[in-house]
Length: 345
Ligand code: DAH
Image 1 (cartoon, rainbow, N blue to C red):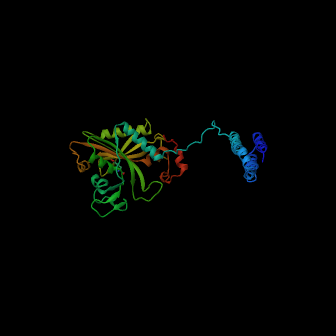
Image 2 (image 1 turned 90 degrees about the vertical axis):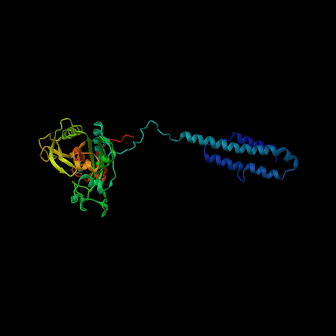
Image 3 (image 1 turned 135 degrees about the vertical axis):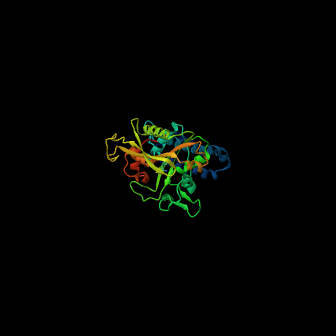
């Protein structure tokens, strides 16, 4: 073993150039592999005499370190070239659109109606969907034998008690809760889901949505009711809208009325939406029955008020001329996407 052997390999290492990862691996095997040139020198080193060991020990170790460092250096240089030649992301491309969906038509109508009444100074109240007989019927002056109190019409959760639990059949229950808890005067709208034991068809469903309105103060008259409904109808269906009130009956209001708005499709001429009449029914209303005020602890001699209630699906059907109620519950995306008022995030 001679000094020149080490110097020769050192020179080769200094001149070493590699184009591919395979070249680098080959070089590593050639110098540092099991049968590599440097490994062989170490083998030989074991059997040389002491003087040679002292002379060549250190340069041999340095050669090995140098070889290891060189191979690493070559590897890194190649990796960098590969990085640079890899295809780069084109930052000027438009981003992937994020689909946010759209509001459900019933929500759109609810927000619109709540927004209108908020402008008139009404608060918003909500109540439980599982209610008791007292809030759904008793306090609203329903006679004991009223058909709504029958299993045929109402979903009972627990029957047989004096005050059974049931799924509320109308949001009028929330006006009872408002009268029980809110300070007078009360001006409130109550949107919510209601449940009735109905066969499902194009015109009826066992679940739907209502919004209830209640105004109680001193000296509230039927003229106030009429004006509130007229203003609402014009905000909702356009400034040309006319209303008409037809006498009706509800246990909790006296007198009671049903309200029609002039058909905003044919403007009163008659079309198939208004079935040729020029009018569309939108809500029920009336002056709160004194018995209802009394049941919630309000003095009917001092206070009076009006109430109204409407079906959100019905209003949405009129607004967008949807002819089958079931569309609102099936969540068919083709239907829901028709209402693409995008959601604010
Ligand atoms: N609760 C009635 C229903 O479900 C709707 C209604 C009518 C509510 C007249 C009222 C009202 O507050 O005054 O059909």
